[in-house]
Length: 259
Ligand code: 48H
Image (cartoon, rainbow, N blue to C red; front, side, top):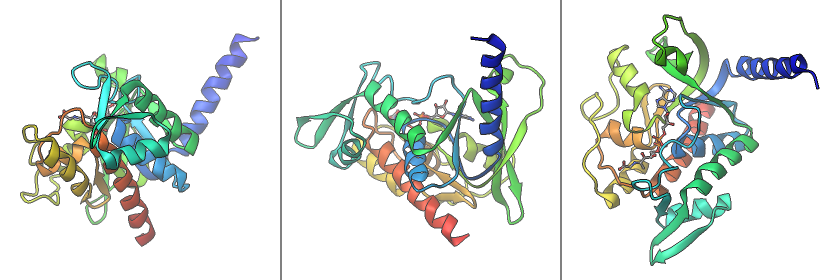
């Protein structure tokens, strides 16, 4: 085995993937449960997508379950998705199912990749590209270690017909749109309303209802949708994240068809 051939294989295949991700149908920011579920359903329909994830590992907040007890709970609708994904979920009592957080995170990642999603970890989305009619039409990327090391290095950009904000509690892409672009979001105030205190029942219902195109070209999903529209957090019940990701994919496909 030759070290240089190994090195060339890595660099060339990565660059090929990155070049292909520079013109996308849908760019997803964040590889948590909502982003990866959206990626799976989009890739399954042969939509050209990529996920950009700031951290080394994918899975977002799934791994730690609730307070580091690495189990998650889902409701019957969430269990249907886990069944479809082949993830074991056992009934705790009527209407409550428990799954292994590690199995959920690893299986979501594997399914999304095998369906055709490209996941770029260690890349942070630091800005958006805005074009005519005040539409989000791309993302600005940099290596995560650049900001960690506080290096002054300019970013690169990609183009995408749609962007999905799956960045969790911080709803970072929506923040960029309101703060840097001065954009008016499709919320009651036009701004990010902010996540409310825990109420599992309402939070789980509303995270799906609030999975919408929040600004032209920009869909919010998962905890980002909760934060933007001001719904209650739900705690370690993850069915809403899966259902929201699935809805985001369906909505993206409808919007792509409209052109
Ligand atoms: C690249 C970024 C950027 C950026 C962030 O937090 P997540 O797991 O998000 P969801 O919405 O899929 O799931 C939320 C769930 O984990 C959760 O927190 C719940 C259910 N909480 C309920 C409660 O009551 O607390 O994943 C988001 C991902 C993370 O991996 C981030 O690293 C990544 O997005 N990310 N990636 N560029 N600018 N910002």
